[in-house]
Amino acid sequence: MERTRAGMRLLGGMIEEHIPKAEPAFVDSFERFYRDNWQRVYRALVLSVSDSDLAREAADEAMVRAYERWRKVSRMSNPEGWVFRVGMNWATSRLRRRSLQLRKVEAVGVVQDPEVAEPKLIDAVRNLPRRHRDVVVARYLLDMSEADTALALGIPVGTVKSRLSRALATLKEVLS
Amino acid sequence: MTLDERIRSNLKAAAAAVPSAAPGDPNEIRNRGKRRRWVRRAGWGLATGIVVLGTVALALPYDPNPIDPATTHDVDSVEIADLAVAVTASEPVSTGPDVWLGLPGPSPEFDTSALGPNLSFAPGEPMPGDLSDRVSRAVYLGDLAGEPFYIYSNPAPSIWDRIFEVTYGNFSGDILGTSLGCCSGGDMDHEEGLPGLSFSQATGEPDLIVAEWLGLSLDVSVVAYQVDGVFIGWQTPVGGVSSIRLEEVPDEFAFIAFDVHGEELNRFQPVQRSSMGDVGGSSVEGESESTSTLPGSDWAPLTNEGSEILPDEIPSDELRALIGPQPGDRLFLVPIDGDQIVVVLRDGETPHAFAISCEVLAAIDLPQGWSETCLD
Image (cartoon, rainbow over all chains, first blue to last red):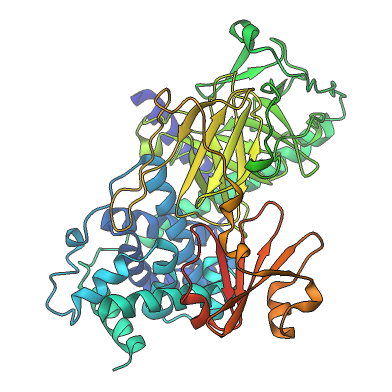
């Protein structure tokens, strides 16, 4: 096993030598995007999947994929939304493939935090069906427009509206 | 403070309260992305060479004849990264890379109409011209939408992240799905060919969301796919492999394997929790009832309360534009508290409720699994 891994590392080094160097402006624009957005995407993912370790991995994986396609992604109207979506899908995939246990809300310290004025509201958001919760997180936490949310989640604007409407109806009912 | 403002401020506070995590070194992120891009480009370059070599004719006719389950004990199989895929013969029909023909499961002898459309691979011919040399062996499953599909193993997408990955797709980059992520993070945590969902952005947008069940026994005739309580289609596995593409990630799903007579052999139905419980799945092989309940005539209850209309009778142009009626659609106008919604039944899709007002739609307790779209 160790030999295999060492071989892979050696092969990796050989390939590394042959990878063309990216121009500085390309690298700079990605690094700026990375520094500006990683934390926001990570936090949104924590709220979406309730697992900080998984969210960290998902944010990294999404950023790797963003860099892999940076020429295309950087020209998108909402690259952050794209990264959020990729991270979310990747995390969902991991959860379902590995049958992980989702951690309780308490695990990420959200409910008890005194800075949250209405823990009941956050709890209600967390208990929304996943597809509704993703729309709420995109719209209210990431401040995306309905059109951007639709693009980011890969669903029609009308579906964003109906999910949001349904989510708000549920939240209103819970809070009342 | 409005509900919108309350949600926004509380969510932001909750996000701010998430213990901050240190982002990884951007150089490392860039290097990982750079390697993947390089590996992908190298693959394309090599594939071009293979296209030239692919002029060697290899096409043998695909044998769609179902096999008698009684003879399945002595069928041939090929290893694809530890997954045994049943094939029609011990010899490949082409070499460099070696391609075998997958063995189709027995054709169903029961009425499958309640399970939705037939999404099975169509018999065709392997097209070796588009094989990439990153693939050393593959099993041809059949055609989907006119494209040949295979199951194979390759070292993708990054040799550092996964040593093997089983992929089913064609070789021109239009991957249907990937599975059996082996050795993620360097750990040899090989996953078995369990049923489940996979997601991939490998070919860009739109995302690939695939329901899959690999390593099926050879007496499985039909795998029926149920999403959010509604059967969306069925497939006869080939080589013990079944896979269909989904439009979006379902909240609930179930895959049910039937034998040739419609008797349930196996079922995969993840536990669904309404809140933050686990989302893991479980296979309950051997524990199921001997027969399965197929959807009855009450599967679309709202349509019983409405009247069927023609596309011209959709109440407004806005709603018509929203629906975009297609030939073959069945439309039902349903009165809801002085307002109206339109329910659309379209072949191969879940029932879809449309309304101008999102409030009207939100007030309805739609049956589980229905889609919905509104305008304002």
